[in-house]
Length: 74
Image 1 (cartoon, helix red, strand yellow):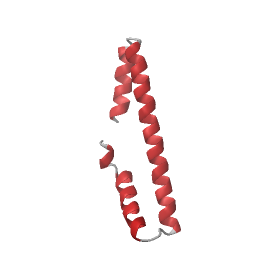
Image 2 (image 1 turned 135 degrees about the vertical axis):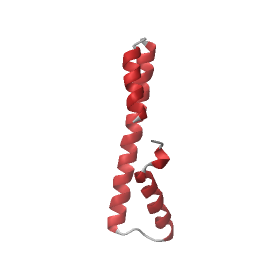
Image 3 (image 1 turned 120 degrees about the vertical axis):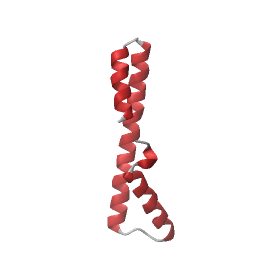
């Protein structure tokens, strides 16, 4: 799934648009914080997997690299 297709990313965008015109209430702010935490964790995991993929490539461990690539595609 492309990141832009994620409902969490779409919710971040919607909350940000709303935030530009008015202050978010506490529930909305909490939701935005949770969504941003999810995004940070997602991007961290993607970076970690890409680094592992590079390590697998450098050591010619193709089975490991294919497994990592499958995780990246999820």
